[in-house]
Amino acid sequence: MTEKKNNKKVVLAAIIVAVIALAMLLTYKVAAPKATAGTKNVTLEVVDNNGEATSYEVCTDAEYLIDIFDEIEGLTVDGTTSEYGLYITTVNGVLADYNADGAYWSILVNDEYGQYGADQQPVADGDKYGLVYTK
Amino acid sequence: MVRISSLLQTATNTVLFTPNKSKVSALTITNVGVMVATMLVGKWILASLPNIEVVSLFTIVYTVFFGSTAFFAVIVFIIVEGIIYGIGWWFYGYLLAWPILFLIAYILRKRANRVNMSVASALFGLSFGMLCGIPYGIMFGLKAAVAWWIAGIPYDILHGVGNFIICLFLYDPLIRALNVVKKTRP
Image (cartoon, rainbow over all chains, first blue to last red; front, side, top):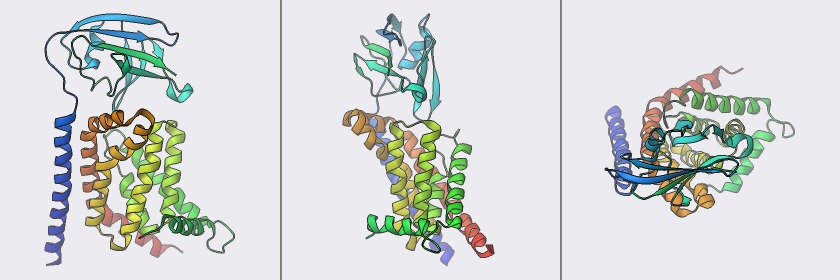
């Protein structure tokens, strides 16, 4: 009898958690950044630790910024992947070590700080992206 | 209603002034050390699984079992994490989120059972991104914080569901194990 009551409580608890999780998932589906298919012309500018800028013009079908990195000849981007997505550590051989001196690689979208990581930043036609060494 | 000031006072008295009100209790220090060690090792072992963790479970179980002493374990855990990984914005998120879980477990400890605590643990996991988003918002702005929170929702869901299942299955065995240790202690 008690076990049956306990099982009911577990099921009720699971339903409560599932409903909240579902509501959050719906929020994500509605509000998360959306990528668009098709060809886009975009610019990627890398500003290194000496403030020197290198600009790349790209014609791409990539949906997210991370996909562009592999398409650009002469550009190398390395990083670590965690539950928060890709954390860029090295661009064109220049390491930004936050633990050593507070340096990191910022992602700029149309000259403003981006709100997403490279793997979540949708690519839109005509956009200008920046990878800027920031300290 | 628990008053935070009286809670902190109780915790301070428990840690610093037992048993003879003049010396730090070696047993309490050891307890805090073991609590922190298990939290750190538990986190490290499961680090490869995104947002599947046992720190929430340990925080809840230790708070139920050790009461306010667990607060110090939570704070030391956060500090050690900061020392290991460096102080970033996330550190301030941890400083907010984990003590909130302690507070919830402390308030619920009189009605603690695996179902109540599993729900509490699940809700904590689901809201973890939102809690960490508060210092993120203070540093980078509300718009950035909301965008960051939304982008991390799938991981928050994983966190909440993982916490629920882990607590549901491991809460009772851990409490039983701690009771066994308590009984066999000289």
